[in-house]
Length: 210
View 1 (cartoon, rainbow, N blue to C red):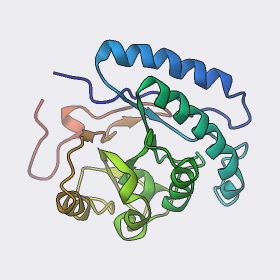
View 2 (cartoon, rainbow, N blue to C red):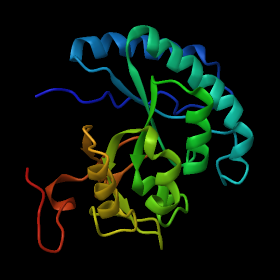
View 3 (spheres, rainbow, N blue to C red):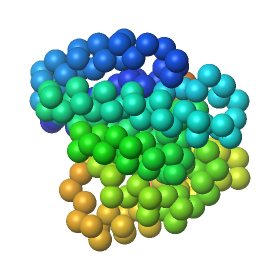
View 4 (cartoon, helix red, strand yellow):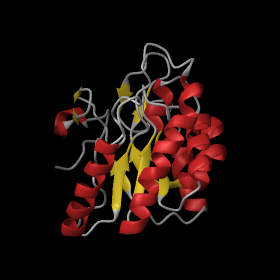
């Protein structure tokens, strides 16, 4: 058994806060990564001051890019790869803004996590059609997670609008060799955590193995 990735909260902080704290946390995580024998760390791209709507998030792309570039440089020197998760209420919430951040940093030490449910929940009703052409080349880690476009509710994989079948087809076409991380959050998904359990994973005809 090995650790695939450290699921850190780095970048789940206000974009106006000093970056020094996040860099200090990263340095600590590099030590943890060495101990756990993993070189991957999940990160985010910061909360704008007003998260009631994402209509104005584009104005924070430059600031988020600068912060991520500092983090990627630090990771590069330590031999780690940062994996940016597209997430609700952060600057990198849509495929367009994720592409802008990844292109702006332009570092092999910053790659993307593909979370189809999160894209659906910010209004991308067909994430593979709308987003894969933009960020697919940067994707180095997959969250197996689905949601319904109609109400944003997280569902069992394949029962929502995340186009997971199309995602798997695309991954096979490019001979993807990375991880598929189960992150369903079906029973109780709080602000920074979630729980599914065997009952939450139940579908119409199958049940997740314990």
